[in-house]
Length: 531
Image (cartoon, rainbow, N blue to C red; front, side, top):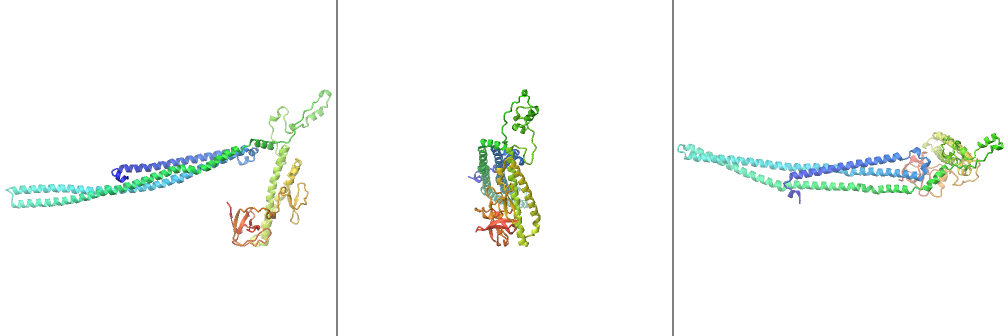
């Protein structure tokens, strides 16, 4: 069944129905747009909420951050941030796949519908024009036939009139004959116009309009089909991100299961254990035996335990619960209890060691670069590195001084046994490395224990038992002789594996398939890192 057959006389209904269908599409697009706005606002509020409760950068070093309950809370905030991202993705996909797509399709349908309605109007105007011609010829035929009848009646009356002359009778007959001839022509014209109109009317109702109505039906069905796809996308868009949303929710659940109350208690103990002994019993002082007052006062001033050390308020009995003034922070952490002081000193030493290792690596890299520049002047001026080498040397000396200072404080705090792992390298006149212990004694061992040594030789990187995994690859743009120690030759067009990125010194560490490793100028190659 189609509209052209069943609804041949319902043009107004079809016009109204198709217009209503297009308005429904517009209404749905508006609905989805408002939904995307809700999603975007929801995502924005979630992000602001996560940001509001997330720890500031300056607060991430607070002791509480080591607790599993705090870490889990941070994990929940991160998962909520990811969840907000998925809500934004839903809004973006709905806008792209539904709103924009349907709006574009809607404009095409409107234009197409307008074309069909104009065709219908044109056909209707053509039929109306033909009908007007038919009506005009019909009226003319009617008028001329009546005139012919009157002329015939007048000729007959004149012929019977005895007073009329023969000329009058002949004239009346000629006039009647002429009128009859005109009426006959009008009759033939009317018949032709009627035939033409009936033919056009038949074409209009059985061909033209049914074809237009069927086109409008096809348009409407395509609109309904496209709208149905938009309805499905409304659901599928959210379904597609549900697995990721599920992972976010699983991450929140995992954050809850990762909370370990026992470990948190141990962390609190580790962070706050003072190392003091509990105070002993207060001795009885018998003033009735004539005890020396000065010695009594002196004995009262002798610390019996942590009460005096922690600034106990003697006017209060429950000193554990009294407020203590904030101690003055000192560089050697002497303001802290013994146990906490040792931990902070060890932590400071580790930081200095890492910084010293970084400066040492930089110094060795600059030395190698200078050596390459001296042997290959076209690559650069060795004198341009003088200021960097000088600054790096000053930094190394400063850090070594700080390292020695903090090692001394750690030894005073009772942590001498822990300082064995803080060993530094010194350079003798021959360029060899000597291992120096914190108290200044030199070790005769040629290779220190890896678990204790902080610094390794520059060339030791190429002697590891287990090769580092490549992080990318590079292609040589120029030839490189690799004449200096630690470098490797390279031919133009050769592809090498990247083992270590440029640390800012202009050199990249690479490896051949045969296992040969070395440094090459970063500017000589194009590098592609693994993702």
